[in-house]
Length: 307
Image (cartoon, rainbow, N blue to C red; front, side, top):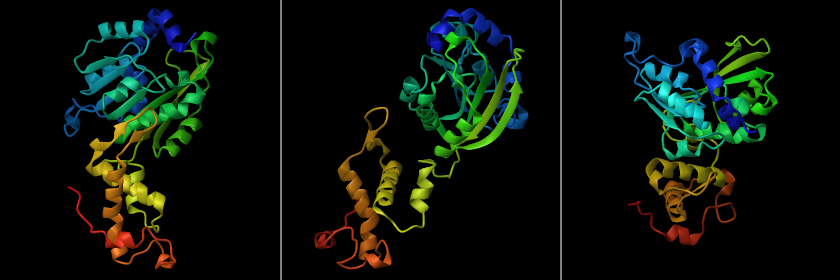
């Protein structure tokens, strides 16, 4: 049985357990990281756009909405999602049927989130799918945004679809995606189960101030190394992302396409001035015998501004 099937069959007891706990107690470890937009002390904070993945009965979504945030609550188990909508009817909560590792319906919204919460969810993601799931989550996070993951340790029913988790895995995935761990808290089980414990991990995606490609763009555009072809292409793509983002077309889960002619145009605009100024890739790449970008025909071509 899949974990979703288990939750469907045990919806009543699961909802009763969730609702027996107060979200502000369960997530006290997040205090100071997420703002309360309704307090006098937080008048400078704007409401955040929040994604609650595996929202369950809506307990946490309702709490976040009560703080003044707009919440997208994702729950794949229909029986739990429908009861959550009944229990926590709130105009600031938008319910959706979706699931990891892809979150396909969420990605179709075209939104980026200030805060993403995965409470008691990660242990249901098969280890082979976690790298992809983490990448999808990071893609949905705004630069400067916060991702909170709670990790369950301990025994569970064999048919519940629970896998072993470690905080070291989260640390590795975060490092691979340029995210930074800002808080790690060990905690006992709030339902009093002696054989269950939790590790809470909060990560942030650094904002370099550019708003586009927050991890790579700063390196690509500002790195002082001598330019190489791969780096030059990445720089070109970054310029396209800044100026003509609408020309990219989604192909599948892993890739997008951009017009080759447009890439060529941006490449020329970026690098022809360097050639005209006799600035080679490296000092030894000057002249006919050195590594160059183009030949005589390129030198005769006029440089025209893009429309």
